[in-house]
Length: 256
Image (cartoon, rainbow, N blue to C red; front, top):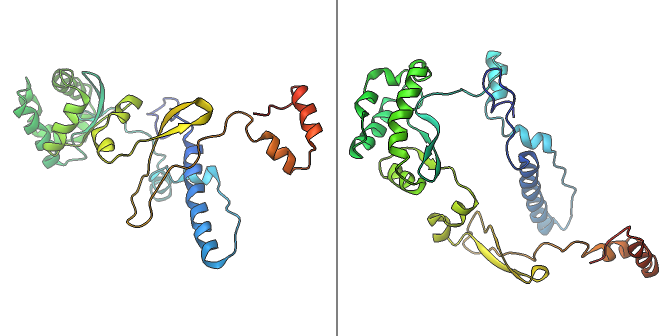
């Protein structure tokens, strides 16, 4: 959260409870390793995953900055040519230059030249390779005017595909609809449909993030309905059917 802020701005919350998502991913990985070990040795083991420790892996080099330089790292702020810009149907994220990489910048400028973008000559000056200049208000206003004029007439998909063809790092800021319609994900049959009995219909789920030559990935059972396993769990804990019925009638539990 702190890394996403700039200067004295408040911290910016990442979406979708990222600490839990990262902990879940590490828990799944640790479980898979323990399961494989159990298959080999015949012995199980406890897997302990800390959400806090998982989050630390997302701090990039913030710890090293402080350890080696005594610098508390935050976001870089606004720098022309790097960041999120509007387009016809949303936004794209572009990295037109990093540091003083003239080669990267030149490819970007040549792409916009081929597109016939107005005032592109304003981006040809050598000063654009200077990070200090790109951080100025003047640079941001010029870049936004030139690039936005072009981007606002095209879709995210067009900008992404043309950026790829011209070796320019640019990517769509995708929402759920964009991901479901993404040509790359669909060409790999990433999205899987499965009938869910509780809903009496199909749901679309993310598929495999990997493909193995000999082991085929598949979806398991759908998520349980509300209270679906309540009775089963309580019976395992020693509750009698009459006790479970009483708890349900009193509204203490819900048995699906």
